[in-house]
Image (cartoon, rainbow, N blue to C red; front, side, top):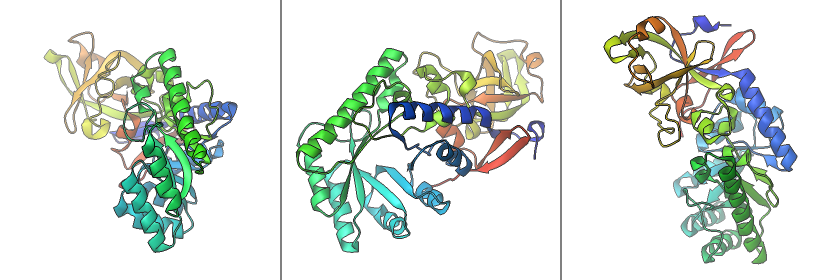
Length: 376
């Protein structure tokens, strides 16, 4: 195995000890609340990571691309929810997976989508299973839990020969929270509105066996999940600086980082230049609107200890600029000489991970290469 000092930079590191602790924390919480955990694997897109989640007790997975569904099904995972509204031009691929034996479930939030799935299913003699996406906070997609459209979509699916699998929601608005009170309120709103949608479908004589909710902040903040059958959360497996600012993890729990090397300085500007630019860190500035702006990432020692007050202030394609948030550091070349190796904690784990074809998993005996899936 390769040791940490032997790795070329930039490299995406996964601290496996932290990752396993994050997995255990989420699984324990879902077990205590009495719901199934169906993790969203778009964060890692990596078989060893997902195998660790399943080994801890997760049942089924959530994906954001059909590429993920295909790759994970080929690896032996059959219970998959594709949690992005199905586009009609992707129904052929979805059908191919189901014909191979994959228990692939689809999502829609509009009448045209429901009719497209139903019509294609009738043509092909396939009864797709579809969940209706519910809008619980105005953040993104979904149908309001009240109003006629929910029942219209439910009937179009059910009467069109589709298996109406239930309802699902994602409380993306929870990412704007940064207090326990706000997080608990977001979690309860997500639960209550999704359960309400399920109750309305059932009252109209329509089946609704599954009530699926989930985001990492709400999953870790919910006080009750009464009426919910499963939770989908994803970024908890690695965490990141956005989650740290929200208040659901500490820096010591962030399992993903980018290993980088100091390659030069602009001493009069107080800059150390590293070989991790935005091609390694991504352009995600998710902390910019939060209570603490980490630029493009928090600077840590090679061993992973945060160096207070130093961030990736900005970046070009292959150059990252390390600077002090307190002002120009005229001694930065002495603090971080050329050749110094640092770790950078990312703003958004999903976006940073997507820059790399594989992770370097940090194990007690050394590092192992863990490939990740790319594409759609």
